Length: 305
Image (tube, rainbow, N blue to C red):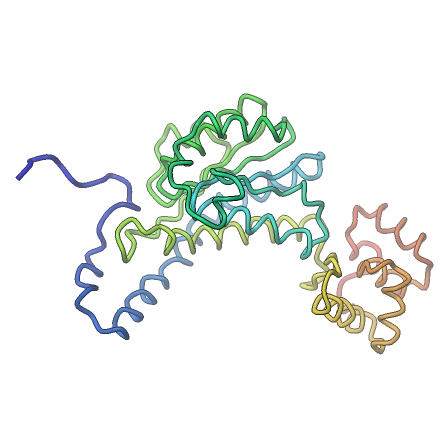
Protein backbone atom coordinates (compact mmCIF):
# COMPACT_ATOMS: atom_id res chain seq x y z
CA UNK A 1 0.00 0.00 0.00
CA UNK A 2 1.38 3.40 -0.96
CA UNK A 3 2.10 5.93 1.79
CA UNK A 4 1.15 8.79 -0.53
CA UNK A 5 -1.23 11.31 1.09
CA UNK A 6 -4.68 11.03 -0.55
CA UNK A 7 -6.36 14.01 1.11
CA UNK A 8 -7.07 17.13 -0.95
CA UNK A 9 -6.96 20.63 0.60
CA UNK A 10 -9.90 21.75 -1.56
CA UNK A 11 -13.11 21.60 0.42
CA UNK A 12 -14.97 20.52 -2.70
CA UNK A 13 -12.83 17.36 -2.95
CA UNK A 14 -13.06 16.20 0.65
CA UNK A 15 -15.23 13.28 1.77
CA UNK A 16 -18.43 14.01 3.62
CA UNK A 17 -18.62 11.82 6.77
CA UNK A 18 -22.41 12.19 6.85
CA UNK A 19 -22.77 10.41 3.52
CA UNK A 20 -19.99 7.83 3.93
CA UNK A 21 -22.55 5.00 3.97
CA UNK A 22 -24.99 6.42 1.43
CA UNK A 23 -24.75 3.25 -0.65
CA UNK A 24 -26.28 1.32 2.25
CA UNK A 25 -29.33 3.58 2.66
CA UNK A 26 -32.87 3.14 1.41
CA UNK A 27 -34.10 5.37 -1.40
CA UNK A 28 -36.04 7.58 1.02
CA UNK A 29 -33.02 7.86 3.31
CA UNK A 30 -30.86 8.94 0.34
CA UNK A 31 -33.40 11.62 -0.57
CA UNK A 32 -33.56 12.84 3.04
CA UNK A 33 -29.77 12.95 3.31
CA UNK A 34 -29.38 15.00 0.13
CA UNK A 35 -32.13 17.35 1.28
CA UNK A 36 -30.52 17.87 4.68
CA UNK A 37 -27.22 18.76 3.00
CA UNK A 38 -28.96 21.13 0.58
CA UNK A 39 -30.52 23.02 3.51
CA UNK A 40 -27.08 24.30 4.49
CA UNK A 41 -26.45 26.02 1.16
CA UNK A 42 -28.51 29.18 1.64
CA UNK A 43 -26.79 29.94 4.94
CA UNK A 44 -23.37 29.52 3.34
CA UNK A 45 -24.37 31.98 0.59
CA UNK A 46 -25.76 34.38 3.19
CA UNK A 47 -22.41 34.53 4.95
CA UNK A 48 -20.98 35.99 1.72
CA UNK A 49 -23.54 38.82 1.58
CA UNK A 50 -21.00 41.65 1.72
CA UNK A 51 -18.88 40.22 -1.07
CA UNK A 52 -21.97 39.59 -3.19
CA UNK A 53 -23.07 43.20 -2.64
CA UNK A 54 -19.65 44.41 -3.81
CA UNK A 55 -20.03 42.33 -6.96
CA UNK A 56 -23.45 43.86 -7.57
CA UNK A 57 -21.89 47.30 -7.31
CA UNK A 58 -19.28 46.41 -9.92
CA UNK A 59 -21.97 45.09 -12.28
CA UNK A 60 -24.09 48.23 -11.93
CA UNK A 61 -21.09 50.50 -12.43
CA UNK A 62 -19.96 48.56 -15.51
CA UNK A 63 -23.38 48.61 -17.17
CA UNK A 64 -23.87 52.32 -16.43
CA UNK A 65 -20.50 53.04 -18.06
CA UNK A 66 -21.42 51.12 -21.18
CA UNK A 67 -19.53 48.01 -20.14
CA UNK A 68 -20.61 44.40 -19.81
CA UNK A 69 -20.79 41.55 -17.32
CA UNK A 70 -19.07 38.31 -18.26
CA UNK A 71 -19.34 34.99 -16.45
CA UNK A 72 -16.50 32.56 -17.19
CA UNK A 73 -16.53 28.92 -16.17
CA UNK A 74 -16.17 25.29 -17.17
CA UNK A 75 -18.59 22.41 -16.76
CA UNK A 76 -21.46 23.06 -14.36
CA UNK A 77 -20.04 26.47 -13.43
CA UNK A 78 -19.91 27.54 -17.05
CA UNK A 79 -23.41 26.26 -17.78
CA UNK A 80 -24.86 28.15 -14.83
CA UNK A 81 -23.18 31.35 -16.03
CA UNK A 82 -24.61 30.90 -19.52
CA UNK A 83 -28.04 30.16 -18.02
CA UNK A 84 -28.09 33.32 -15.92
CA UNK A 85 -26.91 35.45 -18.84
CA UNK A 86 -29.49 33.99 -21.21
CA UNK A 87 -32.33 34.92 -18.86
CA UNK A 88 -31.52 38.63 -18.75
CA UNK A 89 -33.01 39.70 -22.14
CA UNK A 90 -36.52 38.26 -21.66
CA UNK A 91 -36.73 39.11 -17.97
CA UNK A 92 -35.27 42.60 -18.01
CA UNK A 93 -35.23 43.64 -21.70
CA UNK A 94 -31.45 43.72 -21.59
CA UNK A 95 -29.32 43.69 -24.74
CA UNK A 96 -27.90 40.12 -24.96
CA UNK A 97 -24.42 41.58 -25.39
CA UNK A 98 -24.49 43.19 -21.93
CA UNK A 99 -24.46 39.98 -19.87
CA UNK A 100 -22.61 37.06 -21.44
CA UNK A 101 -21.67 33.58 -20.31
CA UNK A 102 -18.39 32.14 -21.53
CA UNK A 103 -17.95 28.38 -21.12
CA UNK A 104 -14.87 26.29 -21.76
CA UNK A 105 -15.50 24.19 -24.85
CA UNK A 106 -18.02 26.62 -26.31
CA UNK A 107 -21.62 25.85 -27.25
CA UNK A 108 -20.96 22.10 -27.48
CA UNK A 109 -20.10 22.04 -23.77
CA UNK A 110 -23.63 23.16 -22.90
CA UNK A 111 -25.08 19.85 -24.07
CA UNK A 112 -22.24 17.41 -23.52
CA UNK A 113 -19.37 17.49 -21.04
CA UNK A 114 -16.07 18.70 -22.50
CA UNK A 115 -13.93 17.98 -19.46
CA UNK A 116 -10.57 18.53 -21.13
CA UNK A 117 -11.60 22.05 -22.14
CA UNK A 118 -11.16 23.33 -18.58
CA UNK A 119 -7.39 22.90 -18.88
CA UNK A 120 -7.10 25.02 -22.08
CA UNK A 121 -5.60 28.26 -20.83
CA UNK A 122 -4.69 29.25 -24.38
CA UNK A 123 -8.30 28.86 -25.52
CA UNK A 124 -9.47 30.97 -22.59
CA UNK A 125 -7.33 33.87 -23.76
CA UNK A 126 -8.58 33.47 -27.31
CA UNK A 127 -12.20 33.38 -26.13
CA UNK A 128 -11.75 36.58 -24.16
CA UNK A 129 -9.86 38.32 -26.96
CA UNK A 130 -12.77 37.54 -29.29
CA UNK A 131 -15.02 39.50 -26.93
CA UNK A 132 -12.68 42.51 -26.77
CA UNK A 133 -12.73 42.79 -22.99
CA UNK A 134 -12.08 46.36 -21.88
CA UNK A 135 -11.79 48.71 -18.91
CA UNK A 136 -15.54 49.13 -18.44
CA UNK A 137 -16.24 45.40 -18.19
CA UNK A 138 -16.59 43.22 -15.08
CA UNK A 139 -15.58 39.57 -15.44
CA UNK A 140 -16.65 37.03 -12.81
CA UNK A 141 -14.80 33.73 -12.90
CA UNK A 142 -16.69 30.72 -11.55
CA UNK A 143 -14.68 27.69 -10.43
CA UNK A 144 -16.07 25.95 -7.38
CA UNK A 145 -12.77 24.16 -6.74
CA UNK A 146 -10.86 27.40 -7.30
CA UNK A 147 -8.29 25.77 -9.58
CA UNK A 148 -9.71 25.65 -13.12
CA UNK A 149 -6.93 26.80 -15.53
CA UNK A 150 -9.41 28.07 -18.15
CA UNK A 151 -10.99 30.43 -15.62
CA UNK A 152 -7.71 31.73 -14.21
CA UNK A 153 -6.34 32.41 -17.70
CA UNK A 154 -9.50 34.23 -18.76
CA UNK A 155 -9.38 36.44 -15.67
CA UNK A 156 -5.69 37.14 -16.16
CA UNK A 157 -6.41 38.36 -19.68
CA UNK A 158 -9.29 40.50 -18.42
CA UNK A 159 -7.07 42.17 -15.82
CA UNK A 160 -4.44 42.86 -18.45
CA UNK A 161 -7.11 44.75 -20.40
CA UNK A 162 -7.99 46.83 -17.35
CA UNK A 163 -11.28 45.10 -16.51
CA UNK A 164 -12.40 44.49 -12.96
CA UNK A 165 -12.49 40.83 -11.99
CA UNK A 166 -14.16 38.66 -9.40
CA UNK A 167 -13.90 35.01 -8.41
CA UNK A 168 -16.65 32.69 -7.18
CA UNK A 169 -15.55 29.45 -5.55
CA UNK A 170 -16.73 27.02 -2.88
CA UNK A 171 -13.47 26.30 -1.09
CA UNK A 172 -11.15 28.34 1.08
CA UNK A 173 -9.75 31.23 -1.01
CA UNK A 174 -6.04 31.90 -0.79
CA UNK A 175 -4.72 35.31 0.17
CA UNK A 176 -3.19 35.55 -3.29
CA UNK A 177 -6.63 35.07 -4.84
CA UNK A 178 -8.06 37.84 -2.66
CA UNK A 179 -5.19 40.16 -3.55
CA UNK A 180 -5.52 39.44 -7.26
CA UNK A 181 -9.25 40.11 -7.72
CA UNK A 182 -11.55 43.01 -6.89
CA UNK A 183 -13.97 40.69 -5.12
CA UNK A 184 -13.92 37.05 -4.03
CA UNK A 185 -17.15 35.23 -3.16
CA UNK A 186 -16.62 31.96 -1.31
CA UNK A 187 -19.74 30.22 0.03
CA UNK A 188 -18.32 27.27 1.96
CA UNK A 189 -21.00 24.65 1.47
CA UNK A 190 -18.77 21.83 2.68
CA UNK A 191 -18.01 18.45 1.11
CA UNK A 192 -20.56 17.09 -1.33
CA UNK A 193 -22.83 14.11 -0.66
CA UNK A 194 -20.95 12.36 -3.47
CA UNK A 195 -17.30 13.33 -3.16
CA UNK A 196 -16.28 15.91 -5.76
CA UNK A 197 -19.75 16.14 -7.36
CA UNK A 198 -19.83 19.92 -7.38
CA UNK A 199 -22.94 20.04 -9.55
CA UNK A 200 -24.78 19.48 -6.24
CA UNK A 201 -24.32 21.86 -3.27
CA UNK A 202 -21.64 23.95 -4.97
CA UNK A 203 -23.79 24.22 -8.09
CA UNK A 204 -26.81 25.25 -6.03
CA UNK A 205 -24.75 27.89 -4.23
CA UNK A 206 -23.48 29.19 -7.57
CA UNK A 207 -27.02 29.51 -8.90
CA UNK A 208 -28.12 31.40 -5.78
CA UNK A 209 -25.18 33.81 -6.01
CA UNK A 210 -25.68 34.54 -9.72
CA UNK A 211 -29.43 35.03 -9.21
CA UNK A 212 -28.71 37.53 -6.46
CA UNK A 213 -26.06 39.46 -8.39
CA UNK A 214 -28.09 40.02 -11.55
CA UNK A 215 -31.44 40.55 -9.81
CA UNK A 216 -30.01 43.13 -7.42
CA UNK A 217 -28.21 44.86 -10.28
CA UNK A 218 -31.38 45.04 -12.38
CA UNK A 219 -33.30 46.51 -9.42
CA UNK A 220 -30.65 49.21 -9.00
CA UNK A 221 -30.76 49.95 -12.73
CA UNK A 222 -34.49 50.72 -12.52
CA UNK A 223 -35.78 47.60 -14.24
CA UNK A 224 -38.11 46.74 -11.35
CA UNK A 225 -41.04 48.81 -10.01
CA UNK A 226 -41.92 47.81 -6.48
CA UNK A 227 -41.33 44.13 -7.03
CA UNK A 228 -42.88 44.07 -10.50
CA UNK A 229 -41.00 42.97 -13.64
CA UNK A 230 -41.69 46.16 -15.61
CA UNK A 231 -38.90 45.80 -18.17
CA UNK A 232 -39.75 42.34 -19.44
CA UNK A 233 -39.71 41.50 -23.13
CA UNK A 234 -43.00 40.22 -24.53
CA UNK A 235 -41.79 37.21 -26.47
CA UNK A 236 -44.43 34.64 -25.49
CA UNK A 237 -48.08 34.41 -24.48
CA UNK A 238 -47.06 33.92 -20.85
CA UNK A 239 -45.05 37.13 -20.87
CA UNK A 240 -47.81 39.02 -22.70
CA UNK A 241 -50.25 37.95 -20.00
CA UNK A 242 -47.81 39.00 -17.27
CA UNK A 243 -47.26 42.39 -18.89
CA UNK A 244 -50.99 43.02 -19.13
CA UNK A 245 -51.54 41.99 -15.52
CA UNK A 246 -48.77 44.33 -14.34
CA UNK A 247 -50.32 47.29 -16.17
CA UNK A 248 -53.78 46.34 -14.86
CA UNK A 249 -52.51 46.18 -11.28
CA UNK A 250 -50.45 49.37 -11.29
CA UNK A 251 -53.05 51.51 -13.09
CA UNK A 252 -56.17 49.72 -11.79
CA UNK A 253 -57.57 49.31 -15.31
CA UNK A 254 -59.30 46.50 -17.19
CA UNK A 255 -57.37 44.09 -19.39
CA UNK A 256 -58.64 45.68 -22.61
CA UNK A 257 -57.26 49.05 -21.50
CA UNK A 258 -53.95 47.48 -20.50
CA UNK A 259 -53.70 45.74 -23.87
CA UNK A 260 -54.30 49.00 -25.71
CA UNK A 261 -51.75 50.91 -23.65
CA UNK A 262 -49.15 48.21 -24.30
CA UNK A 263 -49.91 48.31 -28.01
CA UNK A 264 -49.33 52.06 -28.10
CA UNK A 265 -46.18 51.66 -25.99
CA UNK A 266 -44.70 49.10 -28.36
CA UNK A 267 -44.99 46.37 -25.75
CA UNK A 268 -42.92 48.25 -23.17
CA UNK A 269 -44.55 47.96 -19.75
CA UNK A 270 -42.79 50.95 -18.16
CA UNK A 271 -43.79 53.23 -21.02
CA UNK A 272 -47.38 51.99 -20.85
CA UNK A 273 -47.54 52.71 -17.11
CA UNK A 274 -46.21 56.25 -17.55
CA UNK A 275 -48.66 56.88 -20.38
CA UNK A 276 -51.59 55.67 -18.29
CA UNK A 277 -50.58 57.32 -15.02
CA UNK A 278 -49.68 60.74 -16.48
CA UNK A 279 -52.03 60.74 -19.50
CA UNK A 280 -49.19 61.46 -21.93
CA UNK A 281 -48.38 60.05 -25.35
CA UNK A 282 -45.71 57.47 -26.03
CA UNK A 283 -42.99 59.96 -27.01
CA UNK A 284 -43.50 62.02 -23.86
CA UNK A 285 -43.53 58.90 -21.71
CA UNK A 286 -40.26 57.69 -23.22
CA UNK A 287 -38.66 61.11 -22.80
CA UNK A 288 -39.60 61.26 -19.13
CA UNK A 289 -38.26 57.78 -18.50
CA UNK A 290 -35.00 58.63 -20.23
CA UNK A 291 -34.63 61.79 -18.13
CA UNK A 292 -35.16 59.67 -15.01
CA UNK A 293 -32.55 57.11 -16.03
CA UNK A 294 -35.25 54.53 -16.60
CA UNK A 295 -36.40 54.59 -12.96
CA UNK A 296 -40.16 54.58 -13.22
CA UNK A 297 -40.69 55.52 -9.56
CA UNK A 298 -38.99 58.85 -10.23
CA UNK A 299 -41.54 59.58 -12.98
CA UNK A 300 -44.81 58.35 -11.47
CA UNK A 301 -44.12 57.85 -7.76
CA UNK A 302 -43.72 54.73 -5.70
CA UNK A 303 -45.58 51.55 -6.62
CA UNK A 304 -48.94 51.42 -4.87
CA UNK A 305 -48.89 55.15 -4.08
